[in-house]
Length: 126
Image 1 (cartoon, rainbow, N blue to C red):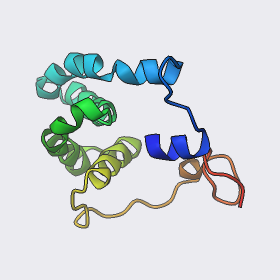
Image 2 (image 1 turned 180 degrees about the vertical axis):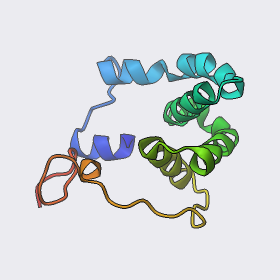
Image 3 (image 1 turned 90 degrees about the vertical axis):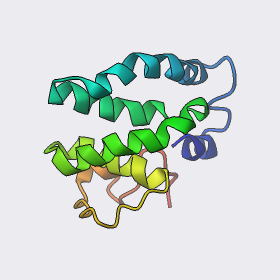
């Protein structure tokens, strides 16, 4: 996502910008989320399991991705929340994990963004 955004909005993550400052908070936020990956409540574990992969897109957290893949796979196998399952599958795919054993999702209109031609929000006109 970062590479894609930078392609269409050069300088998006330039130091001293709001997006860069927020991205730099991810390691701190990850430390706050991590304990909830083992919470006794399934809903809490799932919420943490969805937040953690998003946070792990920060380069300093890349070493945690294999551990988080276990949680993402559990979400794919047990959750009935399709948007959450999409996040989990996207993280696994982005991290190079094999997801061929997971049934692909059907395309949803909200996946494509507001454009009638199927372009997403960050894609330039064809």
